Length: 141
Image (tube, one colour):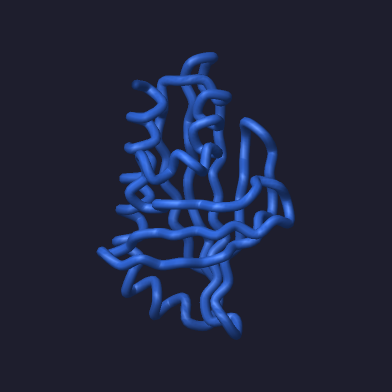
């Protein structure tokens, strides 16, 4: 398995960060990586996600695995025949009442993960970092 994990400190409460992170309708206004999400944030639900990577639009329909309000949510996206899977997660840790650490990452599996990650791994990590920065800017403004 390969994985990417990023972190950023946001000067806001976990609740405020959670509110922005789970306001899917607002994603097109601030998120340059996951440019849209449609669907309900509940375990077992399917989302319709659109992301931009290396200037290309990618659509996928992950299944939500876990939702813990103000703390954590994750989904699993799968490519056909087990070729490439991504378990994407967002975790919020309170540092103080007005400071939160966002841990944003993804664990990759599937028999093509090595080849695919060599091709998109750096761009994916950079996109996670940019999304984190955009979220920080949104929440702190």
